Length: 424
Image (cartoon, rainbow, N blue to C red; front, side, top):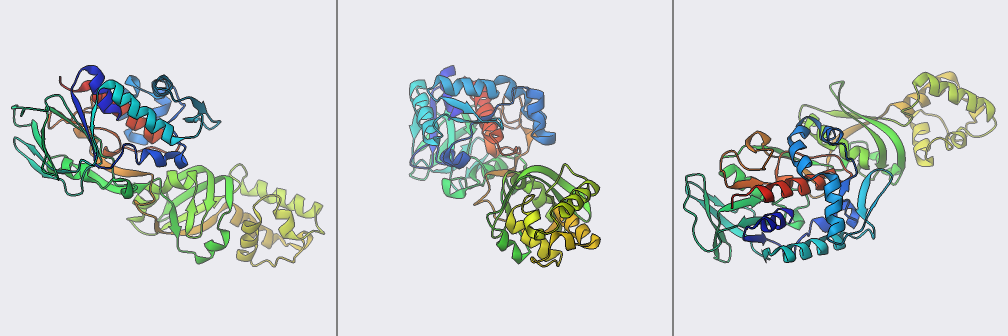
């Protein structure tokens, strides 16, 4: 939608092909239907670091259209915004529907023609025919819509829909998303087309996805939320990921922002063998400091049950599980706890071990890890380095960020860049 609107404002004749019966189906789900539009991080060098080693690819796109420009854009098209303490930016009324409606009006005013339920069957070029293996969610065709463009060998010529309609275009922007939330239409078609066109595709994995664990007793902790903990993922005793923040226990394992942000590296690490997850519920304490605190608390509240003393430090269900794992009965009083038992409690509070079993897959992942290899895309224009009238935007690219508006910012920035870079 961003790419189509920008291309039209630049002067192109634009047709947006949408597989679904309305625009923005996936956008409606973002931010628990509140639509976390962006992250209010206006220092671009700090922002790109949040995306890891590949973040530098986005610097030019963010310079064109970063969080500040994104917020101004949505305010301009009628979406009032609010910024929460964690930097997450939402519509003031917490409505993803308002965002989609505003974008639809933006496209209408920009003069974009929209074909809904337009499922692509094939893409033809002078040297390629690309079958639409899984359909297309949304793709932008611009400029020459009524006559075949006769260019050199890397020009895309014609798109054929499942209903038999054929459309000719000078430029093609693939904005189909990845594989996450396939029920919204993100079935990976854009990745298949890119591969057929000669582009390399980095292996895809679910990202920002809940993690399942092997320990069946985890179900007893269902619903327990810890606001500030540190998670370590280890493979063969080597730390493969480290994240800090909120963790939510579920009936199958772990979720919450910290787990979601760590999930991609946990999944990739599991390819090399079993992954151990360690959680430190007191990341600001050393083991020695925490042991001293427990000594003081147990001495001061010696007549109370140990579980009641620990309840002031951690959620009740978690305390019960820790005492069970430490083989300490609930009816024991704090003053009766031995040094050996106290050390066991400290170890469990700072190194709570779980074994990764898997993940909930693309159906539950917020974004797709992997995609069109960045080395084959011009970071200043989002143009393919193989076909000079082909562009890629958003999740179809091999780049993803943490939860908190970072991934939608990729969509806005790359869409804006591609839309403004097309050949007229």
